[in-house]
Image (cartoon, rainbow, N blue to C red; front, side, top):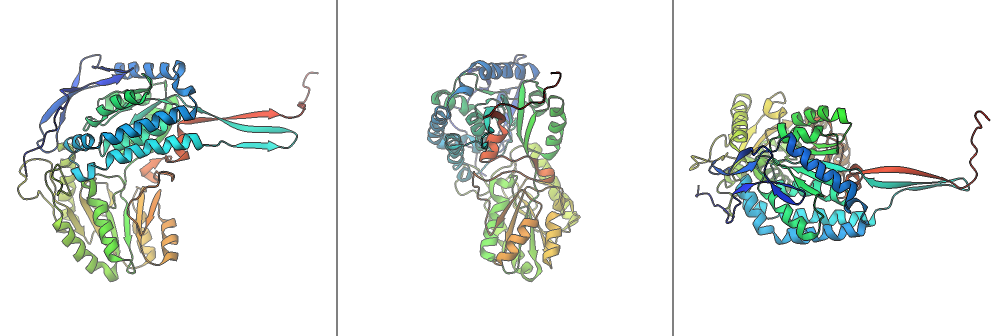
Length: 497
């Protein structure tokens, strides 16, 4: 592996951004940030605590109650959101360089993130201008209409995989709706979040509308969830953390939207286009270093094509290039952090006792340091295996045969998760009927993971709570007030007359 590429002009430290200013933690505390290729500390970041969250929420609350942002006409906010998108697109090269350095994501996959982030802002800018709310008429008696109002201060807690793009997925609808925000980025990958303050300032977002508090989830994140002036929390992360947030948000009756873990099935029937299915299922679990919530990490293959599928799949996996994340030829880079590397490699060792290892299973040759893992393929994996049941979040896949449609459905649904599913078959009737019976919030038929921002995004079971995307995002960040107007004299019982 080559020597780690270090971007120019890295910040010396990362601070919070509160009320339009970069500030240290009130107690001066910091935490170390590592790069995943050398696992060396490259800077320190301010470690937010209760006092820092209190400070940021107070600023965001004041900006909501007294500032111009919530009361702007939708067209005014849309102009600013479109300016944000324009600026984000000009930062593509810099963003990709920072994301690759901070996360270990291959540079070719990091390069698309700015475009996707910009599109999130453009989409919600269009949506708030075009949005119509319901009106109901009772002829001659009453008109009822919906008055939509932003909810208040939104707490946004984001994960370490593709952090900048996933931050934009929450920031765009929250700001479009007129909320003010406090963003708590993942502590493993805080670097690219530092691009937002300059972008928002240049676009014309008023001070106090957007705030960042860095720190650990159990300190800064926990304080944000429990704060009485934070009206809603949007969280993306592990299911166990989601359960904790659910409990901690209960005393203040917060709105919650949580996109949690996944162990998504890709079901390949014998009549599928095998070339397309193999392309998709290889990409679907090994892209983004396997660190993606919608990864098709369980592949269920009909027995008639199982041997051929496994042979071809294993051959492809063995040819995937693992290496320096900054090398354009790299297809899998370094996992994000030593803690996560340890978790993934522990699952690989567990898998070796549960199923047949067909590819990978260790470090690639020449990688004595860094969080590098070979693309790892287990075959003939029983549904009771931990590598079948539990989310690994790395470049590890479990392949299992099935004989009938009913068995395939039972295997697909036999986990606690229910985020995504992929179905490959040329039988249109089967595709729809099978797909609709899978316990998953999102199903792709003969397709890899392509997103339409108008559709709901979210999971069922342990994979999430609520949905975002399109109007559902605006519903989450808004209160919908019912207004009732009489068109005739009110006929009210005369109590006490």
